[in-house]
Length: 195
Image (cartoon, rainbow, N blue to C red; front, top):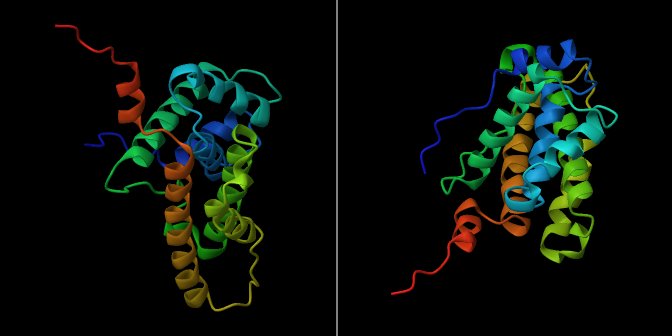
């Protein structure tokens, strides 16, 4: 599978959210959408339900203007492609390293918390899956991570990279456990040919 799209620029997307008076950061919105996708909320009957859930959770149930609706749909589609890619090319939408290690750590915690929100809202029975329970527990702990501003920024940056890679893999495990891949979803809809 060739992925033609990439995630939007963090700062630009964050600015659009801010201009539209959405209380979520770009990282939190991407986490929410990723959680919805990993729960199996895509395609078929779910085609517009993700939007309804995002409206409910991020905008008091009100639809977004086209200024935000279009970039959100693109983010959803791109994230779905990245999650569904067999080369595991999924990555999180976070500020770049120039933003500073503390801002990146806060964005990661927000991303993880909103990922869990999206996953839990769309799949309330996720804790019944024993294989994923440990991953969910780890993600909850990561979402509560804090830091001391007196900490060595180099050490914190290295630790952040390791945690980020763990989260990336954990998200893909959730996708594999709960979601139907694009190829399998489209194969279900194909009708057999009669000869």
